[in-house]
Amino acid sequence: MTDPRPTLRVAVTGASGKTGAAVVAGLLEAGHEPVALVRRPEAAASLREQGAAARLVDLDAGPDAIAAALADVDAVHHVPPNMHPAEDALTADVVAAAERAGVRRFVFHSVLQPHVPAMPHHLRKATSELTVRSSSLRWTVLQPASYAQNVLPFWDAAVASGTYRVPYDVARPFTPVDLADVAGAVVAVLEDPATTYGTFELAGPEVLTSADLAAVVAELSGRPVVAERQPVADWRAAVDPDGTRADVDDLVAMFDHYDAHGLVGSPLALGVLLGRTPTTVRDALRRDLGLAPA
Ligand SMILES: NC(=O)c1ccc[n+]([C@@H]2O[C@H](COP(=O)([O-])OP(=O)(O)OC[C@H]3O[C@@H](n4cnc5c(N)ncnc54)[C@H](OP(=O)(O)O)[C@@H]3O)[C@@H](O)[C@H]2O)c1
Image 1: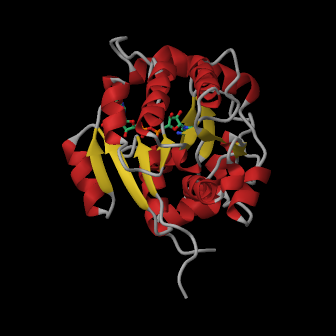
Image 2: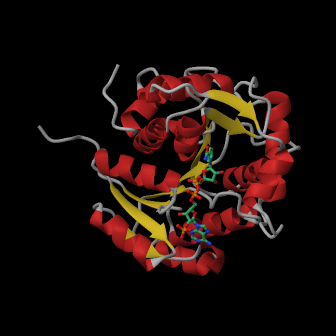
């Protein structure tokens, strides 16, 4: 029997990054044709090896250059560069490029709770959402929570030292979402025209503190690991010793907000889009670390 779903050719921005790569993998797995938009030839080569098409474009190059890279695609999934200081202007260029290239379907990768005034990079997402909604495109906005996979870069240090260090209160709540579920939601949205003009939070099924996340690391590694609050000044000195990084003030503003409130959302929309309960952090990490299922 033939698959009734049409194969979609989907341009994915930020395709060499963590999010974009997961979306490209999800589209390939679902039988679609991702077109990875990347700025480095070596990233294009690596994505082609995985079976994706790839086109070179710097998203800072303006709408004409971006429109050229969008020729003959059915849809765009726009993943803005992480913490880009002009993300809203860059997204306006991608939207203008999609309009110019005649690509009507557009999915915007936003963030959970974009309208928090205390977090400048979230506000840039809110401004970008407004641009997307004000366009002539058939848009959908996805608002993912922080990813379950964000623990992984700290895994080895946490297991070796016995402490999972975060620069905010370890008792604040989060609803981490599995990046593979996020990719699944992108596919679901692109396949279902009823999601057009919808805005969907993508949050995981559990409310977890950093202390809870440390307990998951301990359980999966078989080693004692507890969460510990790292003073923000220590974090800043470690990541930006000479004070030259442009994104550090925005990250500190995010940690201050996390310190006061955490960041939580509802798993309901994600469950509907996936047609199942979203993946727990434990199961996502177990899968990504190649551990046997529970
Ligand atoms: N991490 C989370 O928990 C989370 C949660 C919700 C939403 N998000 C959002 O997801 C997005 C992606 O985050 P991420 O963590 O996946 O980022 P990432 O791994 O740092 O990847 C960023 C990507 O943007 C590309 N890029 C940067 N500047 C570019 C330019 N001028 N032109 C073309 N490409 C450019 C990078 O290319 P190179 O490889 O060439 O550097 C890379 O592919 C962000 O907008 C973030 O706000 C993240």
